Amino acid sequence: MKLYETTIIFDPGLEEARINEELERVTGPIAQAGGEVVEVQRWGKKKLAYNIKKRRDGTYVHVKHKRPAPLISEMDRRFRLNESVLRHLTVLAPKESPRVAEEAPKTEGAPRAAEVAPTAVE
Amino acid sequence: MARDGESRSYRRKFCKLCFDKVDRIDYKDDRRLSRFITDRGKIVPRRISGTCARHQSQITEAVKRARILALLPFTSDQYR
Image (cartoon, rainbow over all chains, first blue to last red; front, side):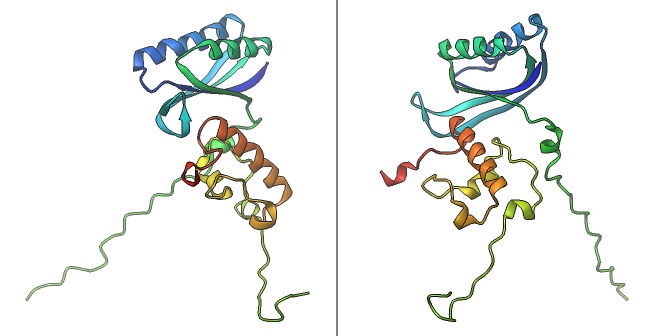
């Protein structure tokens, strides 16, 4: 089974509970088919670069998963029928994806100690 | 052969992504990709940006994916 990553843009009007419910419908069949959900990333509400279905924003969810290939087209079909999904994209995940996550590690500047020594007042 | 005589100075272009030792360009990284599109949303050609063939093809694919996800624009409305 190959590793896929799917990004789904939900309607921004959907509340948290509905999104969880919708996600459940996506991730549910994976386990049944012997697949595996590797990671779920919620990017939250983001501004769209262009309007989709007259919406300016969308709630982004990114899922990494393994599943048998025939199920991808089935998932795709369901997304297209689903009114609350503005957009979706499934691609094959790059082979060593951890590399991407490690990119640009934030180096915290060491707090500089006060260089000026307190001058003794005579 | 320099057309404008000796006055014009040439600076060799280099691939910024090779310079940064980027292994793979991610379509989710819209901040990085936005450096390789024009303000109208077009992909900057290799002859302008100086990117190497390998990275340019990665950029192309990543930008196209990012456009589907509305992370990057297909075009900019402001010129309409």
